[in-house]
View (cartoon, rainbow, N blue to C red):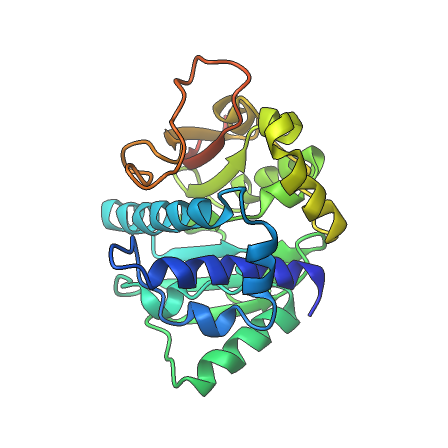
Length: 275
């Protein structure tokens, strides 16, 4: 499996470890199987950077954001971007009439489906795999798979934008906001520009570069960045804040006005009306 697939595996490994805690924030009984062959090895390699803690908090935040958005709207079309070894279609409850499109490299999606099939796992929602490179014409492939651009959509981009350049992130957000009507929703996580240059994070970032999966994009002003690309932030949290792993994050949460602090952002946003 390629380098990007390995990032999916160490994400699954972190979910497996969280699921096995007595006070787990969520349960993913498939994660340990999806973390093979190198997920736990890589997670050990990144030990000390709170990677597992962040993935656990992020997973719970995104689970809650998905559930909250679908319960509070009539949205029933969901797109999981760079879905990796995520098993939400197998472990979460979904509303009637929902359809989930899972976008990632075709080989990775096929591998995930094969592993889950061996476990006898069955999706809890109609799930449509869309094997495509997000650097290519992924929207055309999504529409060919049945995506309806006239319907409001919930877009989920988890653990994706770190690995893109700022230009690529902007283009992705522009594509998504233009792919459907206003009042579509986006759930996304980002890191701060400060984190990418802070002395405390350089060892972790160096390991990522050595492994061929560098983090490239971060912003200290996520709401403003999203607004520039047509999205209005409705919820913005940092790990450790209420609703984002309060009591489980291993670091103190610095006030937002404090400058020079590495941060991660967990975000829910809505597509602004286009004039």
